[in-house]
Length: 277
Image 1 (tube, helix red, strand yellow):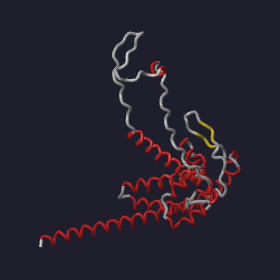
Image 2 (cartoon, rainbow, N blue to C red):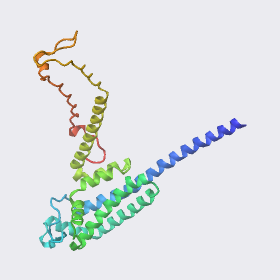
Image 3 (tube, rainbow, N blue to C red):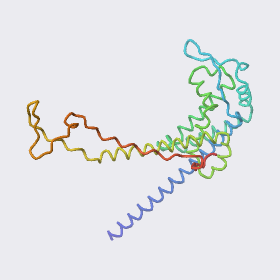
Image 4 (cartoon, rainbow, N blue to C red):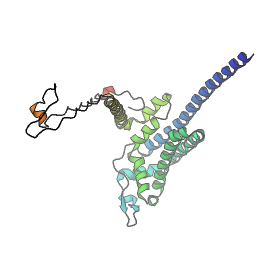
């Protein structure tokens, strides 16, 4: 009887572990689907406001107290004036509302798990705040009164490739084609970011292996202590060969350090990212 109870207990434990695994996977997928909604709204908002990536941000003058004051709209670049006009249209309002609702959904689904809050909620909340600061600035330029707000305003305009790569890592794979189509104007920069990240990972891995090899390398044996001798009559240990002249003068050349292997060079043909391009 006791053996049967033990087997039942093990069976219950196994079933429970399987159910927990399935629940965790489903929850992760639900979280990524909520991130899908935010990613689509965010990039569509950016594409609508700025169909062509701008080359210049907001022009401001610095104030004595450390704040900033945007120049009047008439003195802003022509491209920025058109951007501000589109940012105040109803389509922009609707897309931001969609992004806000999706961010709230991500927050609710990730709130019970600290890791998921760090991986999903925090970066998405930061992007939402970035878009909000930008839109408020377009509605009233005087709200951009600090360097931090000015940096956020310009970041939304000029750092879209970096922001879209953040979202790329949080969406589901079945959104790949649609997301890729929305990133065409930023594809080259996004591919470069991904290639640089892959190169950094390879270099980090190579550095770890080099350190491990150095730790395993046997240390050279300490030389035996030499007996004292008169300056003009150096002595050697019995049965040992006398050192070569260069060695006796301390001119031995150290072993050349082994050079680290260069990471393989990548090219456009080697890139296999699916999120953009």
